[in-house]
Every structure is written in structure tokens, then in C-alpha cells.
Length: 366
Image 1 (cartoon, rainbow, N blue to C red):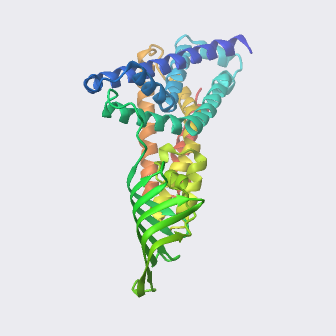
Image 2 (cartoon, rainbow, N blue to C red):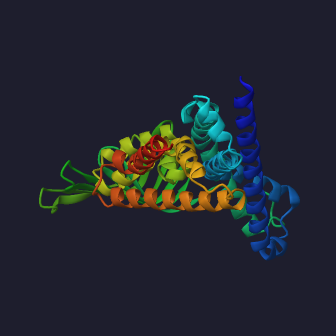
Image 3 (cartoon, rainbow, N blue to C red):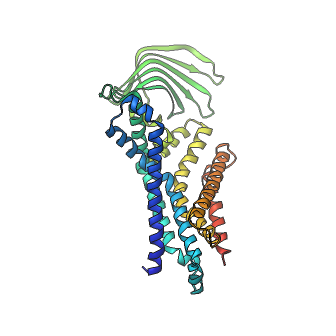
């Protein structure tokens, strides 16, 4: 690696790491102070608080990495511009891309790291964070025995165009209570309704108790008399683990789980829900590229700064550019979720616009 490359990359790395630590430190301090009364009231232990903030670090890293990349790029190239080093490098025949080659490679590595962390680490960490937060709110000084998870009022889309409405679901005992299942045809017409007081999963099968089945015609009118069984084995492919995964929020799923969830929903015809989930899924792929794209955007802005403008000016420009990027991305996502844009285009349009603008601004540099 050339001395020039090491000189530029060292500055970018130092500012990037400093920004990450500052952002993480500020988040912990602000969150701790804002919740200090509740923490003292519930007598949360130091170990529990440490686990809580450590579990949120991957989420914060994914969120602040693009902004840290922007600040480090704007500051480094702004200082080079301030010291007339860019003019000297350009006079020697080096293009902007050759000068920024290692910085762009660094941005690519950060993008890959963000993608891996957001898919493999963030869902697990966020789930753990929410459990610890609930434990703190309930009071860590209370019973230390972990209560089994109980999910109340679940509404789920399953296979074979089935909609599940469950009053109470306990994964530990593999039981459901207050069950209503609606089966629909391809045109979303109701064909069958199943009501049961309880369902127990054993030996790979669901057994329903006090089960009533209603059959409907094409006009959604009941056919014949409802059928009642005190006990009945139901041909439902969803296992307790499937039901647990189906009720998870998209941010708690990795890419594979989201793809499986969308596939299941595609059988139910829930168009708007599927569209929104597809946008969230495609955003998982496009969002990590923000780091490299925003580096490309920061280069021309830093070189357009006045010679006297460095330091705080670079932070101000970074905040402005990052804010505009965020507004554009939120606008594109909102249009996509309203159905005016295809999910893939909605998740990638802001990145395409910013990338095109960045390359255009770089090409116009003297």
C-alpha cells in the first residue's frame, strides 16, 4: 500500500471508529438518564443493565455506520482540500477515484459487515433486548424464575389460505386456546370456519377439543348443519415453532425467515401485507449499500467546501446530507407501501438516485 493510501485510510479509520464510539456512548448515556427513575424504582441490577445495552450495540452499529462513514469521508477529504493536498495530487495525474480507492474499499467492507450484522446478529440481539427491557420494567427484584412465554390475541396467516385467530398460545406447553380458523379459496371467499376451545400439539399432530366446523358455499352461506366433535385430529401443517415464527415482527426475523413468512402469506392473498413485507425484505439487501454510496456522496461535498471550512463545517454538511438521504429514502418507502411503486424499486430508488447524483458530482469536479 502506498504512503498516500495509508495516510488517507488512517484518517478515515480513526474518524470512523471515533464516531462509532461517540454515538454509542451518547446513546447509552441519554437512554440511561431518561430511564434512570424507572431503573432505580425497579432496582435493576448492574449486570442486567450491562446485558441490555450490550444487546442493543449491534442495532446501533447498523444504524450509525453510514453516518460515521459520511463524517469520516467529509472530514478527511475536507482537510486534504484545506491543505491544498488535493490540488497537488490532481496535478500529479491522479483521478478522484484513484485518490479515494482505499476509502471506497473500506466502504465496501463496512457494507458487507453491516449486511452480515443486520441479518445474523440484529434479530437475535433485538429479541434479547426486548426481553431484558420487559424484565426491567416488571422489576428485576421480583421472582427470578423465568415465566413461560404466553402470546395473547394472535392473528396469523397460514398455509392453504387459512387465517388463525388465537386468544392464547403457549409455546412451552404447545397449546392454543380460543381458536378460530377461517379457510378461503383463491378468490378470498370463505369456505370453512373452525371453532375450538383448545388445541394441543402432540406426536406431530394438532388435536382440537370441543370443535365445531362450518362449511360455506360460494355466497358465504352456511351449508347444512355445523359438525361438532368433542375431540378431533386436525390436518394443520403449522407446528408450534411455525406459529411462534409467524407472530414475530419483521425486525426480529432474518432474511431467510422473512422469505419463508412472505411465502406463507402469498398463499393467503393478503396483498397489502405482502407488499409491505417485500419492501422490508428488499430493504435488508439495499440498506447496507448506504455506507459505500454515502462515501461517494461525501467526496464531492467535501471538495466543494471553502478552504477555511473544516472541522465543525464537515459535521454540519454531514448532518445535512444524511438528513436529505433519510428524507428521500423514507419518501420512496412510503410511496412503495402505498402501492404506487414496485417493492424492489421502492427499496432501491433512493439509493439509485443518490448514487447517480454522487457519480455526476464527482465527474463535475475540476
